[in-house]
Length: 196
Image (tube, rainbow, N blue to C red; front, top):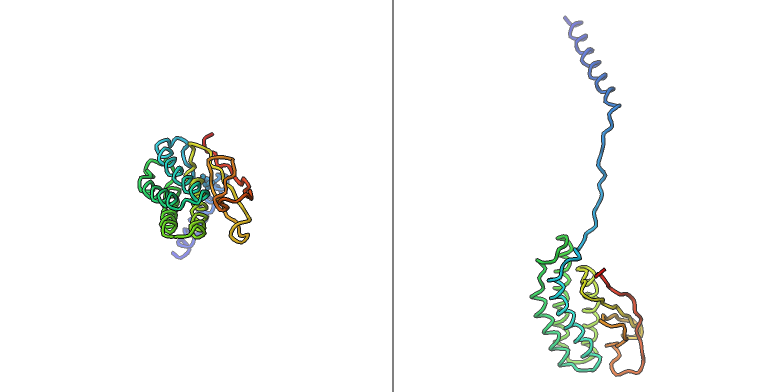
């Protein structure tokens, strides 16, 4: 009886081994894990229309600081905050991670705008403006604003040679960090053009 059980076990093991060996001819196809890039659709005209107004307020702040008009800068900052509340992120045709990143960026910009409005001196407003400019540059790239080209400038001679950036809707250098100065300081670092 023991021999029958042993023979049966050996037969089963042999059968399993043969089946397993025949499986070598079949290739197990594994689909590659390809990460698709996070994309924003180029067809986001409703979002871009509101974002254009948002950018115009930023450009007004920049021009006001260049012309040393602190109350105009405050008004434009207040208008920019109001526009933040109406940015239609739900219309942005993008990956959810991009939308969340953009929303987080806007929260930081809003806090810095409030800081700019609270400052009383031009120098302190310019420090907040530098932070806003960098965050806005990141935001424009994140949402891939496509209604117009946004020019990114840098001047390394401001803030004790620490440098600062600003955005413009023109290639003309109008450095808000050197208001009234005859010194021209500004290098075009980037042209954000997502409308192609």
